[in-house]
Image (cartoon, rainbow, N blue to C red; front, side):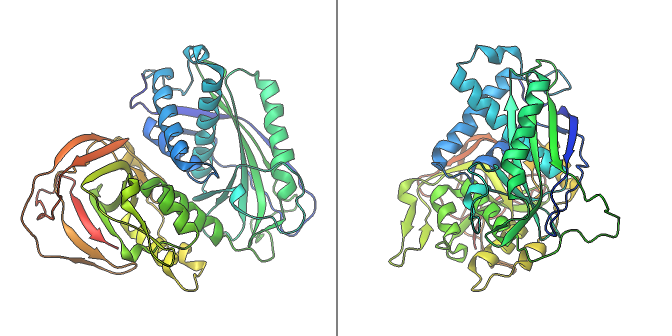
Length: 431
Protein backbone atom coordinates (compact mmCIF):
# COMPACT_ATOMS: atom_id res chain seq x y z
CA UNK A 1 0.00 0.00 0.00
CA UNK A 2 1.46 3.35 -1.08
CA UNK A 3 1.60 5.60 1.98
CA UNK A 4 4.61 7.91 1.81
CA UNK A 5 7.47 6.86 -0.49
CA UNK A 6 8.51 9.27 -3.25
CA UNK A 7 8.08 7.80 -6.69
CA UNK A 8 10.17 8.61 -9.77
CA UNK A 9 8.57 9.22 -13.16
CA UNK A 10 10.57 9.88 -16.33
CA UNK A 11 9.69 11.40 -19.69
CA UNK A 12 10.20 8.59 -22.19
CA UNK A 13 9.69 10.49 -25.43
CA UNK A 14 9.55 14.16 -26.45
CA UNK A 15 8.21 15.12 -29.88
CA UNK A 16 8.08 18.66 -31.22
CA UNK A 17 5.64 20.00 -33.81
CA UNK A 18 6.28 23.07 -35.91
CA UNK A 19 3.45 25.59 -36.09
CA UNK A 20 2.37 27.81 -38.95
CA UNK A 21 3.85 31.31 -39.16
CA UNK A 22 2.16 33.60 -36.65
CA UNK A 23 3.43 36.48 -34.50
CA UNK A 24 1.52 34.95 -31.60
CA UNK A 25 3.07 31.45 -31.67
CA UNK A 26 6.42 30.56 -30.15
CA UNK A 27 6.94 27.10 -28.72
CA UNK A 28 9.34 26.04 -26.02
CA UNK A 29 11.12 22.77 -25.37
CA UNK A 30 10.21 21.09 -22.05
CA UNK A 31 13.06 21.36 -19.57
CA UNK A 32 11.68 18.82 -17.11
CA UNK A 33 12.40 15.23 -18.13
CA UNK A 34 12.04 13.44 -14.77
CA UNK A 35 10.37 14.18 -11.45
CA UNK A 36 9.43 12.52 -8.21
CA UNK A 37 6.29 12.92 -6.12
CA UNK A 38 4.60 11.66 -2.97
CA UNK A 39 1.04 10.38 -2.47
CA UNK A 40 0.06 13.77 -1.03
CA UNK A 41 1.45 15.58 -4.07
CA UNK A 42 -0.43 13.34 -6.50
CA UNK A 43 -3.61 13.80 -4.46
CA UNK A 44 -3.23 17.58 -4.48
CA UNK A 45 -2.47 17.57 -8.21
CA UNK A 46 -5.60 15.54 -8.98
CA UNK A 47 -7.63 17.93 -6.83
CA UNK A 48 -6.14 20.94 -8.64
CA UNK A 49 -7.20 19.50 -12.00
CA UNK A 50 -10.74 18.56 -10.98
CA UNK A 51 -11.66 21.70 -9.01
CA UNK A 52 -12.18 23.91 -12.06
CA UNK A 53 -14.19 21.59 -14.29
CA UNK A 54 -17.77 22.46 -15.20
CA UNK A 55 -19.30 19.63 -13.20
CA UNK A 56 -20.79 19.15 -9.75
CA UNK A 57 -17.80 19.96 -7.59
CA UNK A 58 -19.06 17.90 -4.67
CA UNK A 59 -18.99 14.91 -6.99
CA UNK A 60 -15.55 15.98 -8.27
CA UNK A 61 -14.18 16.10 -4.71
CA UNK A 62 -15.66 12.68 -3.98
CA UNK A 63 -14.07 11.30 -7.16
CA UNK A 64 -10.65 12.61 -6.15
CA UNK A 65 -10.95 11.03 -2.68
CA UNK A 66 -12.18 7.81 -4.29
CA UNK A 67 -9.19 7.67 -6.65
CA UNK A 68 -6.81 8.60 -3.87
CA UNK A 69 -7.80 5.50 -1.90
CA UNK A 70 -7.72 3.28 -4.99
CA UNK A 71 -4.23 4.42 -5.98
CA UNK A 72 -2.95 3.72 -2.47
CA UNK A 73 -3.98 0.07 -2.89
CA UNK A 74 -2.62 -0.35 -6.43
CA UNK A 75 0.82 1.27 -6.12
CA UNK A 76 3.64 -0.54 -4.32
CA UNK A 77 5.23 1.28 -1.38
CA UNK A 78 8.71 -0.23 -1.83
CA UNK A 79 9.51 0.36 -5.52
CA UNK A 80 11.40 3.52 -6.50
CA UNK A 81 9.53 4.10 -9.76
CA UNK A 82 5.88 5.02 -10.03
CA UNK A 83 3.74 2.25 -11.54
CA UNK A 84 0.16 1.05 -11.28
CA UNK A 85 0.16 -2.63 -10.35
CA UNK A 86 -1.62 -5.30 -12.37
CA UNK A 87 -4.05 -5.68 -9.46
CA UNK A 88 -5.80 -2.61 -10.92
CA UNK A 89 -6.90 -4.78 -13.86
CA UNK A 90 -9.35 -6.51 -11.52
CA UNK A 91 -11.30 -3.29 -11.06
CA UNK A 92 -14.54 -2.74 -12.94
CA UNK A 93 -13.83 -1.13 -16.33
CA UNK A 94 -15.56 2.15 -15.48
CA UNK A 95 -13.70 2.37 -12.15
CA UNK A 96 -10.31 1.66 -13.74
CA UNK A 97 -10.90 4.22 -16.49
CA UNK A 98 -11.94 6.91 -14.01
CA UNK A 99 -8.87 6.25 -11.85
CA UNK A 100 -6.48 6.13 -14.81
CA UNK A 101 -7.83 9.35 -16.30
CA UNK A 102 -7.66 11.32 -13.05
CA UNK A 103 -4.17 10.02 -12.23
CA UNK A 104 -3.12 11.05 -15.74
CA UNK A 105 -4.47 14.56 -15.11
CA UNK A 106 -2.49 14.74 -11.87
CA UNK A 107 0.70 13.59 -13.58
CA UNK A 108 0.17 16.15 -16.37
CA UNK A 109 -0.22 18.89 -13.76
CA UNK A 110 2.94 17.81 -11.94
CA UNK A 111 4.88 17.71 -15.22
CA UNK A 112 3.77 21.24 -16.08
CA UNK A 113 4.47 22.83 -12.70
CA UNK A 114 7.89 21.15 -12.52
CA UNK A 115 8.54 22.71 -15.93
CA UNK A 116 7.99 26.21 -14.56
CA UNK A 117 4.25 26.80 -14.89
CA UNK A 118 2.43 28.20 -11.90
CA UNK A 119 -1.29 28.70 -12.53
CA UNK A 120 -3.93 26.43 -14.08
CA UNK A 121 -7.52 26.75 -15.26
CA UNK A 122 -9.88 24.65 -17.36
CA UNK A 123 -10.13 25.59 -21.02
CA UNK A 124 -13.92 25.16 -20.97
CA UNK A 125 -14.18 28.08 -18.54
CA UNK A 126 -13.07 30.49 -21.29
CA UNK A 127 -14.60 31.77 -24.53
CA UNK A 128 -12.98 31.60 -27.95
CA UNK A 129 -13.26 34.90 -29.79
CA UNK A 130 -14.70 34.33 -33.26
CA UNK A 131 -15.35 30.97 -34.88
CA UNK A 132 -14.27 27.81 -33.07
CA UNK A 133 -11.43 26.20 -35.09
CA UNK A 134 -12.65 22.71 -34.10
CA UNK A 135 -15.24 21.04 -31.90
CA UNK A 136 -12.48 19.40 -29.90
CA UNK A 137 -10.63 21.32 -27.19
CA UNK A 138 -7.75 20.85 -24.71
CA UNK A 139 -8.16 20.17 -21.01
CA UNK A 140 -6.13 22.90 -19.34
CA UNK A 141 -4.54 26.32 -19.63
CA UNK A 142 -1.27 26.98 -17.82
CA UNK A 143 0.35 30.33 -17.06
CA UNK A 144 3.83 31.08 -15.76
CA UNK A 145 5.36 34.15 -14.13
CA UNK A 146 6.58 37.01 -16.32
CA UNK A 147 4.83 35.69 -19.43
CA UNK A 148 1.71 37.36 -20.81
CA UNK A 149 1.04 34.36 -23.07
CA UNK A 150 -0.22 30.98 -21.88
CA UNK A 151 0.22 27.30 -22.71
CA UNK A 152 -2.55 24.83 -23.54
CA UNK A 153 -2.33 21.25 -22.28
CA UNK A 154 -4.19 18.05 -23.10
CA UNK A 155 -3.88 15.04 -20.80
CA UNK A 156 -4.00 11.44 -21.99
CA UNK A 157 -3.57 8.27 -19.93
CA UNK A 158 -3.69 4.49 -20.39
CA UNK A 159 -3.34 1.29 -18.41
CA UNK A 160 -3.55 -1.11 -21.34
CA UNK A 161 -2.29 0.36 -24.61
CA UNK A 162 1.11 -0.36 -26.17
CA UNK A 163 3.70 2.41 -26.26
CA UNK A 164 3.50 2.89 -30.02
CA UNK A 165 -0.30 3.07 -30.09
CA UNK A 166 -0.41 5.37 -27.09
CA UNK A 167 2.16 7.76 -28.53
CA UNK A 168 -0.05 8.13 -31.62
CA UNK A 169 -2.99 8.92 -29.36
CA UNK A 170 -1.01 11.59 -27.54
CA UNK A 171 0.06 13.06 -30.88
CA UNK A 172 -3.57 13.15 -32.00
CA UNK A 173 -4.41 15.00 -28.79
CA UNK A 174 -1.81 17.63 -29.60
CA UNK A 175 -2.74 18.03 -33.27
CA UNK A 176 -6.49 17.86 -32.80
CA UNK A 177 -7.06 19.54 -29.43
CA UNK A 178 -4.12 21.87 -28.78
CA UNK A 179 -2.64 23.05 -32.06
CA UNK A 180 -5.86 24.45 -33.61
CA UNK A 181 -6.14 27.06 -30.82
CA UNK A 182 -2.57 28.35 -30.88
CA UNK A 183 -2.41 32.03 -31.74
CA UNK A 184 -6.17 32.46 -31.32
CA UNK A 185 -7.70 35.09 -29.05
CA UNK A 186 -9.56 33.45 -26.17
CA UNK A 187 -11.11 35.91 -23.74
CA UNK A 188 -8.25 38.39 -23.21
CA UNK A 189 -5.38 35.94 -23.60
CA UNK A 190 -3.53 34.15 -26.39
CA UNK A 191 -1.93 30.69 -26.25
CA UNK A 192 1.53 30.88 -27.79
CA UNK A 193 2.36 27.18 -27.32
CA UNK A 194 0.99 23.94 -26.00
CA UNK A 195 1.57 20.37 -24.86
CA UNK A 196 -0.06 16.97 -24.92
CA UNK A 197 1.06 15.02 -21.85
CA UNK A 198 0.54 11.27 -21.99
CA UNK A 199 0.81 9.02 -18.92
CA UNK A 200 1.60 5.47 -20.03
CA UNK A 201 0.85 3.14 -17.10
CA UNK A 202 0.52 -0.20 -18.89
CA UNK A 203 3.68 -1.66 -17.31
CA UNK A 204 3.26 -2.82 -13.68
CA UNK A 205 6.88 -1.85 -12.92
CA UNK A 206 7.47 1.53 -14.59
CA UNK A 207 5.11 4.24 -15.81
CA UNK A 208 6.40 6.72 -18.42
CA UNK A 209 5.45 10.11 -19.83
CA UNK A 210 5.11 10.94 -23.53
CA UNK A 211 5.25 14.62 -24.50
CA UNK A 212 4.22 16.35 -27.71
CA UNK A 213 4.77 20.11 -27.81
CA UNK A 214 5.00 23.21 -29.97
CA UNK A 215 8.50 23.57 -31.43
CA UNK A 216 10.45 26.78 -30.81
CA UNK A 217 10.81 29.02 -33.89
CA UNK A 218 13.53 27.77 -36.25
CA UNK A 219 15.26 31.14 -36.14
CA UNK A 220 14.97 31.53 -32.38
CA UNK A 221 17.96 32.96 -30.55
CA UNK A 222 18.54 33.59 -26.83
CA UNK A 223 17.75 37.27 -27.40
CA UNK A 224 14.34 36.65 -28.98
CA UNK A 225 11.48 38.24 -27.05
CA UNK A 226 9.01 35.51 -28.03
CA UNK A 227 5.56 36.19 -29.51
CA UNK A 228 4.25 39.69 -29.99
CA UNK A 229 0.78 41.18 -29.63
CA UNK A 230 -1.65 41.86 -26.77
CA UNK A 231 -2.43 39.09 -24.29
CA UNK A 232 -3.63 39.30 -20.68
CA UNK A 233 -3.44 36.04 -18.67
CA UNK A 234 -5.04 37.47 -15.51
CA UNK A 235 -8.32 35.66 -16.27
CA UNK A 236 -6.48 32.32 -16.21
CA UNK A 237 -4.71 33.19 -12.98
CA UNK A 238 -7.94 34.40 -11.39
CA UNK A 239 -9.60 31.14 -12.49
CA UNK A 240 -6.77 29.24 -10.79
CA UNK A 241 -7.63 30.82 -7.45
CA UNK A 242 -11.36 30.28 -7.98
CA UNK A 243 -10.42 26.60 -8.13
CA UNK A 244 -8.28 26.91 -5.01
CA UNK A 245 -11.17 28.57 -3.14
CA UNK A 246 -13.45 25.75 -4.31
CA UNK A 247 -11.02 23.24 -2.79
CA UNK A 248 -10.84 25.24 0.43
CA UNK A 249 -14.48 26.15 1.00
CA UNK A 250 -16.59 24.28 -1.54
CA UNK A 251 -18.28 24.99 -4.87
CA UNK A 252 -20.74 27.62 -3.61
CA UNK A 253 -17.93 29.90 -2.52
CA UNK A 254 -15.81 29.05 -5.58
CA UNK A 255 -18.58 29.93 -8.04
CA UNK A 256 -19.50 33.07 -6.10
CA UNK A 257 -15.85 34.12 -6.33
CA UNK A 258 -15.81 33.57 -10.08
CA UNK A 259 -18.99 35.70 -10.35
CA UNK A 260 -17.46 38.29 -7.98
CA UNK A 261 -20.27 37.78 -5.47
CA UNK A 262 -18.01 36.92 -2.51
CA UNK A 263 -16.06 39.42 -0.44
CA UNK A 264 -13.32 37.81 1.68
CA UNK A 265 -13.14 40.92 3.87
CA UNK A 266 -16.56 39.96 5.23
CA UNK A 267 -15.37 36.54 6.38
CA UNK A 268 -13.80 35.00 9.43
CA UNK A 269 -11.16 32.41 8.53
CA UNK A 270 -9.18 29.85 10.47
CA UNK A 271 -5.40 29.90 10.17
CA UNK A 272 -2.73 27.46 11.25
CA UNK A 273 1.03 27.79 11.70
CA UNK A 274 2.98 25.22 9.66
CA UNK A 275 6.51 25.18 8.23
CA UNK A 276 7.19 28.53 9.86
CA UNK A 277 4.32 30.26 8.00
CA UNK A 278 0.64 30.91 8.51
CA UNK A 279 -2.00 29.29 6.32
CA UNK A 280 -5.74 29.74 5.85
CA UNK A 281 -7.27 26.33 6.45
CA UNK A 282 -10.00 24.89 4.23
CA UNK A 283 -13.32 23.95 5.82
CA UNK A 284 -16.08 21.73 4.50
CA UNK A 285 -19.13 23.97 4.76
CA UNK A 286 -22.58 22.53 5.28
CA UNK A 287 -25.63 23.98 3.55
CA UNK A 288 -26.61 25.81 6.74
CA UNK A 289 -23.27 27.68 6.75
CA UNK A 290 -23.77 29.37 3.36
CA UNK A 291 -25.95 32.48 3.19
CA UNK A 292 -26.83 34.97 0.43
CA UNK A 293 -27.52 38.66 0.88
CA UNK A 294 -30.37 40.60 -0.77
CA UNK A 295 -27.96 41.66 -3.55
CA UNK A 296 -26.87 38.09 -4.18
CA UNK A 297 -23.50 38.18 -2.40
CA UNK A 298 -22.44 35.04 -0.57
CA UNK A 299 -21.10 34.80 2.95
CA UNK A 300 -20.40 31.71 5.02
CA UNK A 301 -20.67 31.61 8.78
CA UNK A 302 -19.31 29.53 11.62
CA UNK A 303 -21.42 26.59 12.82
CA UNK A 304 -21.16 24.36 15.87
CA UNK A 305 -19.56 21.56 13.83
CA UNK A 306 -16.37 22.37 11.95
CA UNK A 307 -14.64 20.02 9.50
CA UNK A 308 -11.19 20.98 8.24
CA UNK A 309 -10.57 19.30 4.89
CA UNK A 310 -6.77 19.16 4.93
CA UNK A 311 -6.26 21.89 2.30
CA UNK A 312 -4.77 25.31 2.98
CA UNK A 313 -3.39 28.40 1.23
CA UNK A 314 -0.41 30.51 2.22
CA UNK A 315 -1.72 33.56 4.08
CA UNK A 316 0.45 36.10 2.29
CA UNK A 317 -0.59 34.77 -1.11
CA UNK A 318 -4.23 34.74 0.01
CA UNK A 319 -3.99 38.44 0.91
CA UNK A 320 -2.90 39.28 -2.63
CA UNK A 321 -5.62 37.13 -4.15
CA UNK A 322 -8.30 38.63 -1.91
CA UNK A 323 -7.17 42.12 -2.87
CA UNK A 324 -7.64 41.19 -6.56
CA UNK A 325 -11.09 39.73 -5.86
CA UNK A 326 -12.30 42.90 -4.14
CA UNK A 327 -10.60 45.44 -6.41
CA UNK A 328 -12.98 47.73 -8.34
CA UNK A 329 -10.61 47.65 -11.30
CA UNK A 330 -8.36 44.56 -10.91
CA UNK A 331 -4.87 45.04 -12.29
CA UNK A 332 -3.26 42.07 -14.05
CA UNK A 333 0.06 43.02 -12.47
CA UNK A 334 -1.31 42.11 -9.04
CA UNK A 335 -0.61 38.44 -9.76
CA UNK A 336 2.99 39.18 -10.74
CA UNK A 337 3.44 40.71 -7.30
CA UNK A 338 2.70 37.37 -5.63
CA UNK A 339 6.02 36.02 -4.38
CA UNK A 340 7.27 32.71 -5.77
CA UNK A 341 6.98 29.73 -3.42
CA UNK A 342 10.57 28.84 -2.38
CA UNK A 343 11.70 25.34 -3.51
CA UNK A 344 13.03 24.63 -0.05
CA UNK A 345 9.54 25.23 1.41
CA UNK A 346 8.06 22.78 -1.09
CA UNK A 347 10.67 20.24 0.03
CA UNK A 348 9.83 20.83 3.71
CA UNK A 349 6.16 20.17 2.95
CA UNK A 350 7.10 16.85 1.32
CA UNK A 351 9.17 15.82 4.32
CA UNK A 352 6.26 16.66 6.62
CA UNK A 353 3.94 14.34 4.68
CA UNK A 354 2.12 17.17 2.92
CA UNK A 355 2.37 18.95 -0.40
CA UNK A 356 2.83 22.54 -1.57
CA UNK A 357 2.20 23.86 -5.07
CA UNK A 358 3.48 26.97 -6.90
CA UNK A 359 0.17 28.85 -6.56
CA UNK A 360 0.32 28.60 -2.75
CA UNK A 361 -2.17 25.74 -2.27
CA UNK A 362 -1.07 23.14 0.26
CA UNK A 363 -2.08 19.70 1.46
CA UNK A 364 -1.36 19.88 5.18
CA UNK A 365 1.12 17.40 6.59
CA UNK A 366 0.91 14.95 9.45
CA UNK A 367 2.49 17.28 11.99
CA UNK A 368 -0.23 19.95 11.94
CA UNK A 369 -1.68 20.48 15.42
CA UNK A 370 -5.25 21.81 15.57
CA UNK A 371 -5.59 21.83 19.33
CA UNK A 372 -5.43 25.59 20.05
CA UNK A 373 -7.04 28.60 18.39
CA UNK A 374 -6.55 32.37 18.54
CA UNK A 375 -8.66 35.28 17.19
CA UNK A 376 -7.27 37.99 14.94
CA UNK A 377 -8.13 40.33 12.08
CA UNK A 378 -6.29 40.31 8.75
CA UNK A 379 -6.68 43.03 6.13
CA UNK A 380 -6.05 42.14 2.47
CA UNK A 381 -2.51 43.25 1.72
CA UNK A 382 -2.22 44.65 5.25
CA UNK A 383 -1.07 43.62 8.69
CA UNK A 384 -2.49 41.26 11.29
CA UNK A 385 -4.42 42.69 14.23
CA UNK A 386 -4.77 40.26 17.13
CA UNK A 387 -7.65 40.53 19.57
CA UNK A 388 -7.03 40.27 23.32
CA UNK A 389 -6.80 36.67 24.41
CA UNK A 390 -9.96 35.24 25.90
CA UNK A 391 -10.62 32.26 28.08
CA UNK A 392 -9.36 28.89 27.04
CA UNK A 393 -11.61 26.08 25.93
CA UNK A 394 -10.46 22.60 24.95
CA UNK A 395 -11.22 21.29 21.47
CA UNK A 396 -11.35 17.58 20.80
CA UNK A 397 -9.40 16.88 17.61
CA UNK A 398 -10.93 13.65 16.37
CA UNK A 399 -8.92 13.24 13.17
CA UNK A 400 -5.64 14.71 11.97
CA UNK A 401 -4.91 13.14 8.62
CA UNK A 402 -4.30 15.25 5.54
CA UNK A 403 -7.59 14.23 3.94
CA UNK A 404 -9.85 15.38 6.80
CA UNK A 405 -8.94 17.44 9.84
CA UNK A 406 -11.99 17.58 12.08
CA UNK A 407 -12.69 19.29 15.39
CA UNK A 408 -15.86 18.90 17.40
CA UNK A 409 -17.01 21.63 19.78
CA UNK A 410 -20.58 22.46 20.68
CA UNK A 411 -19.63 26.12 21.04
CA UNK A 412 -16.10 26.97 19.90
CA UNK A 413 -14.73 30.01 21.73
CA UNK A 414 -11.60 32.01 21.14
CA UNK A 415 -8.62 30.93 23.23
CA UNK A 416 -5.16 32.23 23.92
CA UNK A 417 -2.15 31.19 21.83
CA UNK A 418 0.18 28.41 22.83
CA UNK A 419 3.79 29.54 23.27
CA UNK A 420 5.23 26.19 22.28
CA UNK A 421 7.10 26.95 19.05
CA UNK A 422 7.33 23.29 18.09
CA UNK A 423 3.55 22.93 17.85
CA UNK A 424 1.47 24.06 14.90
CA UNK A 425 -1.23 26.44 16.10
CA UNK A 426 -4.76 27.13 14.94
CA UNK A 427 -6.09 30.70 14.73
CA UNK A 428 -9.41 32.31 14.00
CA UNK A 429 -8.87 35.33 11.79
CA UNK A 430 -11.03 37.79 9.90
CA UNK A 431 -10.04 38.66 6.33
